[in-house]
Image (cartoon, rainbow, N blue to C red; front, side, top):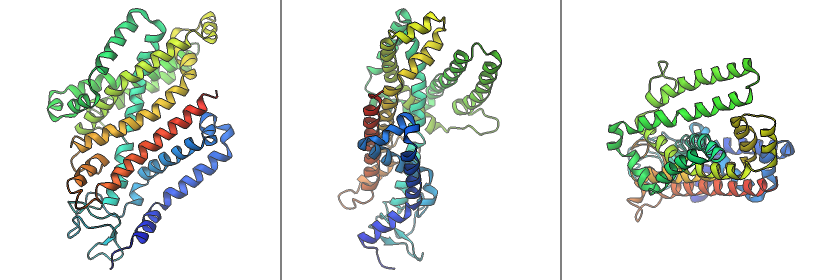
Length: 384
């Protein structure tokens, strides 16, 4: 077999992403048709910047979900004779098989590692950011609403964490030496409680006057939440449905811990502003409880800035995960995450640029898409 030309490589790569293109076309068509019924998400399609950003992010989300179908080779497999091969090189002894973006220094397929790397990034960044938001919201709402000593104490803790350089703090939290001390597991034991607390408070405040429905929702939340909590934080799930290995736990806890104080500050500031509004005073006059007012009056009216910050924060987290992988502190040394792949490729960048460039461009495009999506959401949310 002959080496593919650049045009053939481009066409082949486009063809490998066919399932993604089909799914994107369906999602865009349905979203545009029903956009007037879809609230802020639907109005996003009135913003060119937001729509382009959404398209880029959707591309990588679908690529991560469909990675098993898209990849051409096992991203961890080392094929004899394919070390540092240029893009379009045919695989020896396998008819009709090429390394579309070449091979890396360990003879692994760069294209497959780039695609599978999206799954590694997008399996951590959005979930960890969501956990950080639950921590920040659960603490930021009462700090802004009640104020006084509670606000002073929580703000002090937040400022204490924010005073430390983020990258250095991140680096310290994921080092093997810290893992041995058990600190990440202790932090997980504290931080992973907040999603359960947040959801329980939602049900408790919303259905306080309907005890039967409240008890059902709270009970289901506690059973599933504590089950997941035992597995994710302490690997104590007897059914092994919820599990997180030590490397992933380190990275996950670090993301939550580093992002939570910033979210806390944002939520606290928004709460201080919104609690002076007439509809909050009306809810207080009706005799609504404090948590009902915070979660069902203040929080929904803060959704615009929080959604925008959520998108931006996923981008920041993606960069942090790439940085950790670059320094060899990612999920695992052989992981195809973009940071590790960039680090492997940069060692021979002057001779073989092809292993480092695809994951670099993938990381850049995802962060760019998230930033554009956030800009579009900000633009549309201001129209509320």
